[in-house]
Image 1 (cartoon, rainbow, N blue to C red):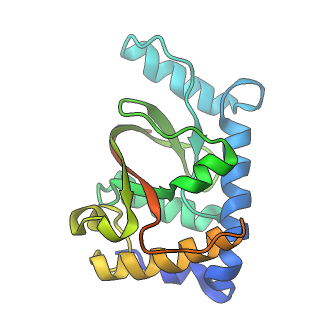
Image 2: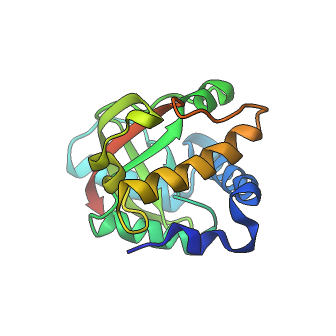
Length: 187
């Protein structure tokens, strides 16, 4: 099992958001398709799409977490079927103008070397208040000891830090974009 706190080290939640944010923005900008798309990512998607007769543009490619180690560990949890969900603060999507994932949409998850690890497809996307997230969803995120308590405590700290970057304050009824996904291809 993954202990999320292991990855925070001395930076803690307050310092880690800058790292997470900069890495996620880097991946999203670099791999959102078009000019910056890695040839490896593009070739992987084209092969996948051709085998399935899909006429879709290459989707967003990104890595979980911050840094190579975390991308590899969280990616391994996805490959192993332990991590099948993720969540984000809805207000951050709005502030950054980032689209909410759509059921059926594909994404490419990258490893720590920025190479394709898996292709996922969203199976469920819901807006849920943080204090109404179910134990089942918390477990599906695959973090720590898989308990709701671990998930809730870790996410309170994370979202408190994240929201502070935008001058916002965490409240227990923070609206989350809760996403479940399935792995459709492992590279």
